[in-house]
View: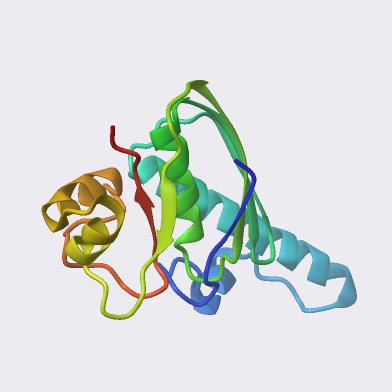
Length: 167
């Protein structure tokens, strides 16, 4: 799929300066140790994002995530496009992440979903009406975005959702 853009200041608050500093090794702040501290924070972010993907039960073989400031590159292999898209959205809908570089390969192909950025005043029903012509198909969008969404009523501006292709 390629490179996906997200709103850097919207999404789950997985990284806070306090938590990262607590996880980073305690060392005197000298020029020699700055690189070590930055590497520890980078590793902590990568580990946190990998755990987040796994906590959503998104099965990706050989999952590997690299963080470079506000860009995430994700590698691995998955059975279907739906899982791949959910991994991209899981990573991109994290505060502080602006882009996701997708390097995941898919075994079974299917039509790609449309990615939609939620706007102020949107609801899943309104989005379903715009994309499917039927507001009652909101549940298709809700199901396509589980486990990132836990309720059809809990969406926010700037969040990116999958709008799956329906026959």
